[in-house]
Image 1 (cartoon, each protein chain N blue to C red):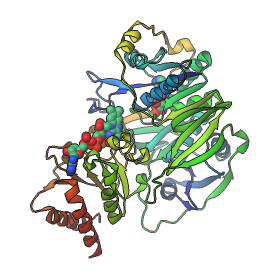
Image 2: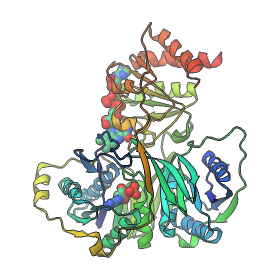
Image 3: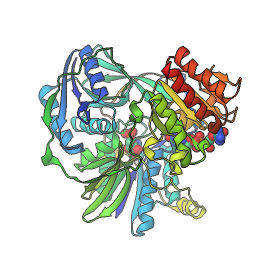
Image 4: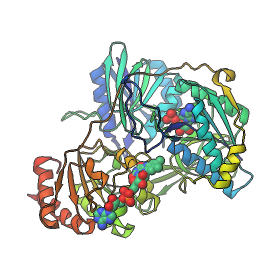
Length: 293
Length: 255
Ligand SMILES: Cc1cc2nc3c(=O)[nH]c(=O)nc-3n(C[C@H](O)[C@H](O)[C@H](O)COP(=O)(O)OP(=O)(O)OC[C@H]3O[C@@H](n4cnc5c(N)ncnc54)[C@H](O)[C@@H]3O)c2cc1C
Ligand SMILES: Nc1ncnc2c1ncn2[C@@H]1O[C@H](COP(=O)(O)O)[C@@H](O)[C@H]1O
């Protein structure tokens, strides 16, 4: 199978998902990795440049990371080329002349196996295809974005006050999320200190982002981010079905809630029935100690 | 300004979606249906524009089976002005986009707002595809729209903040969130919505074929059941904290 991987960078480094996809593409056969060079992503200049490349290389499969930009670019590219598109898949393999993919659907409540006839465009969830130890960064070919097709004007970047100094939520191996049980934004240092002790990212329930205690981008769940870390810690979160949709595929789930009947305990590997204000500081200390020894 | 919102009716977010006996589809009998959550945000965003400028016209459209009429009625009850239904029981995603592009050609909105993705297929395809068919620019996953000289400013949530893009009209955006929570229909809104006509026509009447590139479902499964976790309760906060930290390090091996 001939695959074209679309690379993405964060700062100067290739995103990890690009390296994951390049390794997958090599497994499937012939792989080319392209990066579209432009000042910043916008759909038309990127789609134009990429569509041209696809028309000349004729890959069976175009793979993108299911990132904010990757998902958008993949969708419009597939529409332009009239190819089948599957977004945010978590597994893929060749099946004769077709491709078989695993795709979460219904906001993560269902896992589907789908067959895609080739050629196709597929975006893949970051971290879904873990890298083998010592995987090498791929060779990347640069193509220029087609600036002439732009119809939008970039105005500015408005930074969020709490701009992430931590790892990004979707890619983090550890996520610590706070819910309404934290009582107010002034108590978020409890969540942050635990996240720092664990080397993880900070998340929130929608009750919290709706109340404006935390920025939207930290929301986990059906209408927020889907996360699949090794460790998910839910502090003062009740476990509504829409929250669970975004985090039930985490490897290990820890829940702290003062209500022994909270739904979150039904899916937790470790549940602690306690007051967050009492338990979390003690747990942060214990984590620091456990990691040090 | 005229704003058109293509919306999709999906199982309500509280539905515990189950796999049907054929193993390839989900149980739809007896479930509650709703407007897809991001489409609700799109409606709210448009209605906030209408609150600010009452001359704004907000229209909704859906391509779907007859039951989708309820979702349109709901949108009217929230405060939308017009609704129309394109009936189709099964249509490929690109066919849906083609039909929506035809509706846009006729209705001539200045701005089309789609949801960022529909919460059944979780794709995020139809919005960009409609823009592509129309040859319009689009901005994905916005949280705010502000009228600006010769167009609109579209705020797009990115890691660490928002990109602000200026788009000439007409343009299309996909919505991630509105500034306020989607409003509930008011009683007068519900009464008014009941009286409104919702014109209906078939996909074929738009000259669109239901076929298009799409996948074949091989199987569907619920995610693995979790449970059988441990509840830690012996000792004071400090003792439990220590037990948990050690269990995470030595048993779960995630520290
Ligand atoms: C269409 C739709 C989409 C949605 N999408 C999302 C989504 O993406 N993400 C999401 O999270 N929600 C989502 N929701 C909202 C969801 O239904 C819940 O309302 C929300 O998750 C509740 O947040 P919470 O658990 O923080 O608050 P609550 O449900 O109020 O729970 C607070 C919990 O804190 C516990 N608590 C209180 N005080 C303490 C204390 N001192 N110590 C320990 N525990 C304490 C309580 O026992 C309770 O269990 C969505 C809803 C809808 C309708
Ligand atoms: N059948 C449909 N009828 C009208 N709008 C739709 C339909 N399907 C998708 N959309 C719109 O396109 C968005 C993305 O859908 P999807 O590509 O299915 O994830 C939705 O949030 C709607 O705004």
